[in-house]
Image 1 (tube, protein in one colour):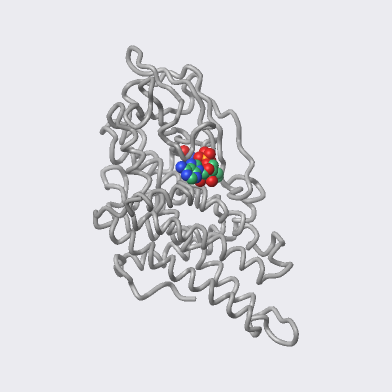
Image 2 (tube, protein in one colour):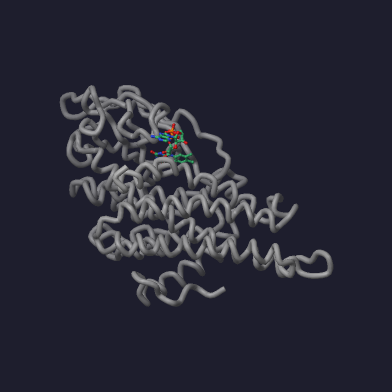
Length: 386
Ligand SMILES: Cc1cc2nc3c(=O)[nH]c(=O)nc-3n(C[C@H](O)[C@H](O)[C@H](O)COP(=O)(O)OP(=O)(O)OC[C@H]3O[C@@H](n4cnc5c(N)ncnc54)[C@H](O)[C@@H]3O)c2cc1C
């Protein structure tokens, strides 16, 4: 199936050329290794290096830090196409690095922090993670307990983080901490915690339902001294940073779901036209045709709401409602599309070698990660004045 060529806004001809290049690369260099990385429960760090070499870790970042000087739409194209690799885990690891952990450094960091963290991250030399969630606080972000006490020249951090993508391999973690006793909306700050700092450790690599190629870590902080030059943004203004980051994260997740649904649709059409039952290809049975049609409709609506949200976001508008709606629609739809793909593949769909079972497991994270469906509905309810 051809690359989308009708150029819906905000995509330009240049974005589409990038799309073609990324798709070729993903299809030839990443997709063939998805199964191996799934089995290894890890994808190698060389993937960061290779993507950096191609310039794709720094698409939206300024050239002075080694980026390509592009825009959010370039990153959006990359994210959508990357998800075609068929490994939610790989897409998550790369996405956490360029999509959620480094943007706060770009937006809120000092020049020194940009040189120490952003530039090497763009070069693929340092790997980044974002540490917000804790054993006792996920949706309720303001309820985090990890605490940073002000001391001479910096902070002493105590606490724990969990479910952190890239947490095991990360060279630095953009970490949310309480900098007042009360914490909450006016008492959270961000510190960049670096691998090798005394008292900082990865306590566990977590086993998951899907996203097997990614490492998801539980992190421990026991009297970790973090120098004040690693304070990111203003003290006690961290909640603002979290909120600013969420929109882009949710948009990226929506784009990833669109790319994944596209791939699932293509794979399923191919299978349904080849596989025969009762004397004809299974696509010749009306019920299967209709299931596939419903998958295509979910893809179409997901693409429409996501591109609309992206257009607004990329043009600097407040797109809270549109991004939230896109995240809500696409994540559940993607899981349902993957589940239907498994059904249409029959017994083969349940087997590892057909890859759709992995897609279904990977897609189940969508309605949970980056803010659950319930939280998306709460945000939308507030927008409706409820
Ligand atoms: C594979 C994976 C990777 C992740 N990567 C990262 C990462 O890199 N960095 C990071 O910081 N976090 C990460 N997370 C954490 C993720 O963002 C949280 O899991 C998510 O926000 C939900 O938080 P929770 O798990 O604590 O669930 P909880 O907040 O405990 O929620 C449990 C249930 O209660 C519901 N609920 C909670 N509050 C309300 C409410 N007000 N109204 C209605 N229902 C409600 C939720 O919707 C959910 O169904 C990751 C999680 C996973 C599973």
